Length: 402
Ligand SMILES: [Zn+2]
Image 1 (cartoon, rainbow, N blue to C red):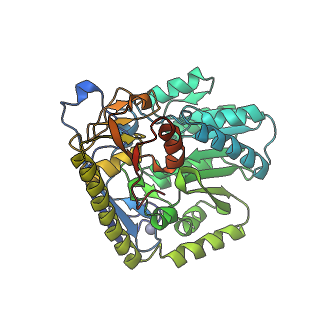
Image 2 (cartoon, helix red, strand yellow):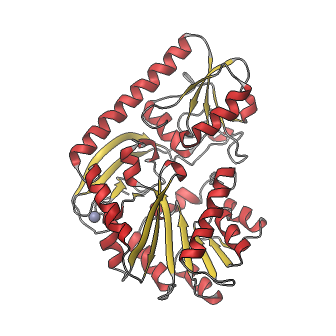
């Protein structure tokens, strides 16, 4: 479905600020028998609303295709960094929202339940909601009660039978929602004046500042800045009570929404966004130019490594890595295989580029170069893999990595 109006303010004044070509779903890792099947590709470009500043993809793949037609491959419990992050997050929310033992916490897009399990340890009653059948099964196995559905009126009814949630969380999921007005209407229907809605997601400003163009993929419907959210939440009688940044996913925003007063952190972030040119077309034009430069640099590095005769591996089969591979047109002609730690990905193939995904220990002496796709954990990966292969040359996409 082509996007013709802003998801937040319904304005039809949308301008394309970045075009990345046609892509398959970034989280749709393929099994061997699917390699010969026709792969669906969709246009991937970033639009910006000229009225409120909201960022969004130009095309929405139906949510059922995104989450229910194939096994969803992201498992929030497969890295120690994530487990620690969600544990710290639960503690912070506990304090800010003044949670008490026995209060209900609902997590929308709860995945395998990493965040909820941290709340459970603190003494909360928990309820997850996640549409992906394979992921909901894993959560239930871990003892995390999960409604295996989209967050909708029927899920709300089930939640209210239990209790009215004191806290509703959503990590890296608000930006995946197709219809944000219908969605917020449902969220508000289960809140009361003491409830807090907490969302965390990659910060639109960080995407611009660090040139993280590969965070743009089809599963991400929206890119979130603070300024467009203020009038959007106001429509539902809500305010942003507090907003803060953290390093998760290389730059995330954590937003506390409720019926209280707007916090001073809101104006502070809007000022930062305006100063950086987040809502300035000229700034985005420069961004698009540097993305093209990034593509040329990566291709040059890979071609020269190939000419030296070595084997090349891509490390960390993250969804964003697929934007990078497909935008740059990288396939098995340039990279021999990819590696990942997740059992949900090992044995499968990357979408579009069809690189086989193996475990990290498949990297042997014949591999000379490694393109880091999961650049948000580049430091960790270099340490872990570099200690076993001291001569391995790492290529970090210069525009996006560090
Ligand atoms: Zn708008």
